Each structure stands twice: as structure tokens, then as C-alpha cells.
Amino acid sequence: MKIEDIYYHLDELSPFELQESWDNSGLLVGDFSQDVSQIVVSIDLDEELIEQMDEDTLVITHHPVIFGGLKQLQFNQYPARLLRMMIRKNIANIAMHTNFDQTHLNAYVAEEVLGYKISEKNGFVAYLDVNEPFGTFAANVAKAFDIKHLRMVECHDKVRRVALTTGSGASLMHSIEADCFLTGDIKYHDAMEAKSIGLSMIDIGHYESERYFGEILAPYLENLGLGVIISQSKNPFTYL
Image (tube, rainbow, N blue to C red; front, side, top):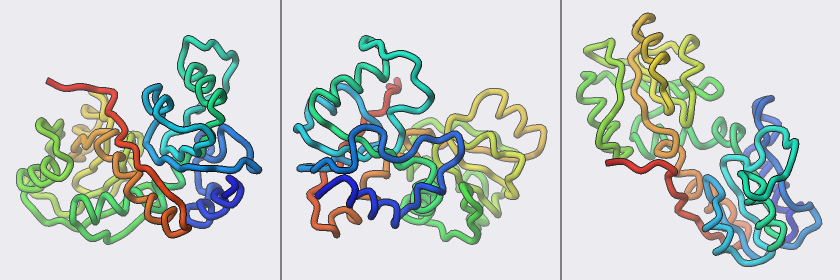
């Protein structure tokens, strides 16, 4: 199957036009007329994954390998080093980032991972009705994401309404209409700001909250009769 045909189906599933203006989803490496012999789905690309892939592979990633404008290609630096490896093996890349967050990822994490029904959805934010003591809810979150040490801002004894944004969503906190906000990459000053406005927050991790990308997308591709390999992307962080 040609990349053009796969791209068409992906665009029907999660329209690329939904991506944020700062995002870079779409076909980033390769060309639409290219024939594909294998599809790999992964959150990110790294050298080990590229080395394992066959030639003429299409890798569909959540995060774009090319995010900002490239002013030079120094092959000992990221991402140029990865791009050179991909070009040598004729490996193409399509990224499905903020468009997929809105159409699939947040809803899947809310309902399939956390096990709560969505009461409202507003762009990147899914709202859940919880009605649990904060400690009980936090313990459920830790178990669902397999996080041993949760980073939390606790402003409520009881959590009634929760907002969820996978990945890095702390910049949205002032638009959140809930008792508690679940997102990743919460910084120190984000926590201070949350305290000042009375918003509880729980850091669910960037990788931890987005690692389901492959298992969500793969069945749609398999329904097209395509063989799909889900890469178990590695968290760049290690923990003691």
C-alpha cells in the first residue's frame, strides 16, 4: 500500500487539520507515492528502533521527529542523526500528535485506563465525574498508571469533577473547570500557581499518560489489512 492511501485513512480517523498551530503532525519524512512493506507504531523514534526496522518501513509516531524549524543538519545531533538513519533505510514517518490527542488519546485514557466515564469533552480536556475522597482517587490514579510516587497538589479533601489532559497540559490550568486536573510535566511554579487558585493537580507523567498510542491506533490499521508492529517505546527517564 502507498503512503498516500494510508495517510488518507489516518486523516479520516483523526483529521490532521485539528492539530494545533504550533504542532507538526502529518507526513514528515518520505513521499506520498512511496510503497510501504511494514508499519511500525510508536510514541517516539530512537536509534535502537530505527536500527531494528526493515527498509521501506512507515513508522507512525505520536510525537513529531521534526518539531521546530531546522536550520542545520548536524548528523551527530538530534534529530538530524535519526533523519540520516531513516533516509538511508528509506524509512518514512507520519506523526499524529495533537489531532490524535483530541480525537482518541484523552478519551481512551479516561475510560479504558482510569475507568471513568467522560461527562464532557472540550478540545484537549476530558471531564470526569468522580465523587471520591482525594486520597482514594489519587491511589486509583497511581495504580492505573503504575506510578509508585505521585506528585500532587492537594487543595480538596473530596474530588467531585476531574479534568484530564494527557502529555503536557499544565498551561491550560486557568481554563480548567474542575476540582482536580490530571496531566503530565507539572513544574514547580505550575504547582505554586495551582495552589494559589485552589486547583488540585496530579502529575500523571508525559510518557506514562501517552504510552497507549500504539495500542489505540494499531487496530484501525489492521482493519485495512495491514501488518502492524507496536513498538514498546522506552521512557527516556529512569527512576530509583
